[in-house]
Length: 177
Image 1 (spheres, rainbow, N blue to C red):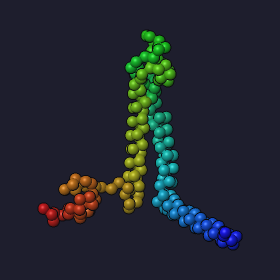
Image 2: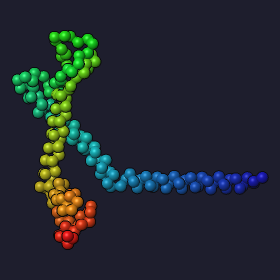
Image 3: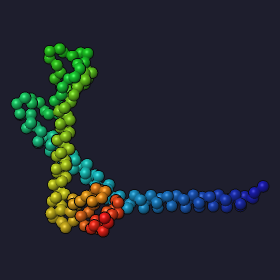
Image 4: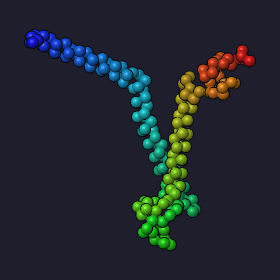
């Protein structure tokens, strides 16, 4: 039968081993999570979410409302839709007043206004980001938008100053041929 002192020592050793494994796991996690690039990505995502909200609001609240003044578009662009098949409670001859009303009735609708609204929001966000990248490149020596050329052999994009292609490793100055 094992003595009490041996059991206590085994428990102490097991506890010490668990503590060391937990410390290694924490150190590994903190090395990963607190690295500069991970924090930069997290901050960038937060800023991007806020920027997206601002651009979406600009497009929805400032740019799109004037489109509703164009003759033939008598409501917001987002509310434009076409009924492909009416629902069971459709008012024949009258149709639906809103997209929500048609969807609640079970109608099959083509919500082209919502699609166009999302396309315009995407284009607005893309143009805004491109403008910010251009301004950053103009104000600093480091440009975000990098010029690339196609490799003569594999046709993948590479830096114009590259001597060899990073994809197919062919020489760009005509050594191979």
